[in-house]
Image (cartoon, rainbow, N blue to C red; front, side, top):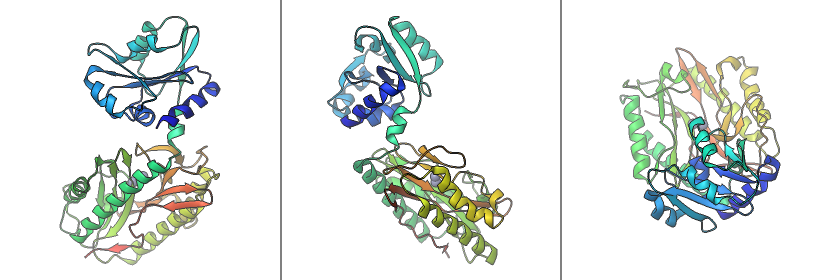
Length: 359
Ligand code: ZN
Ligand code: ZN
């Protein structure tokens, strides 16, 4: 963990700041190891300060990397009040996370700092570091994926037809918890028949009927790291059109996976998969991006979509998840989690991608 703060410090000259204030708790966790709900970090070449309040002093002692100086405030005080005393003397530019600090806290920060300190809005610095995973992070994401895959296979063994979408979602989530997940990565999607045509469908108290196509999108969080996978399964023998659409989405998905490689533009990978679907006339029915980075958060950098300026790098962990949604009828989405490598990618998801028919 300690070398992550060094990498952040290395980005600061280009960002035009001397010291970076990190208030986003996921970013604080990434830099320091701290998992509590109130904390901040100050990072520069010289400064490594972690701050929390009195409730988390013991937790911080156990979790925060030894390279950080640990400080705390009494309950009634905002953590921002310990910053002034933690900064080096003289004029300096203090970066803050514009996506995280509220206007109210920004004003408080300004009041507590001496005039020698200039505040500089920054965005995405730690997120940029987080996009490239180290071996330990990839191991955690792989373990979360293995766990979630096992829960899915367990779910299918009990059949789909006759159970409500909500029952299925709860059973899947319960199984992930029993296998040791911290929590689910996100609210699971179980969407049968026409409901599957909504990419962000919420599970309903509606039974899956024999012959329904069911979109299931789920993930486990383990050691803080998320997994993400979608499979579309048939609750009984599907019709010919369903099979055709399924095969088309699968072809697009495999094309997308094969297009992944370090150095390639994220929008080019999106285009490779999207063209397969658009060439057969279903471009309008694939309304979302091809994928997203996954890590401590379920959606993080890089983003694979049209007009993304991101470039894939070795160590990115991204989803490849094309879909076709036919309103009022059914939807198909197939999603794998992959690690970007120098010459391609490694697929973490182990659940088969051919159409599974569950009786
Ligand atoms: Zn997903
Ligand atoms: Zn996803």
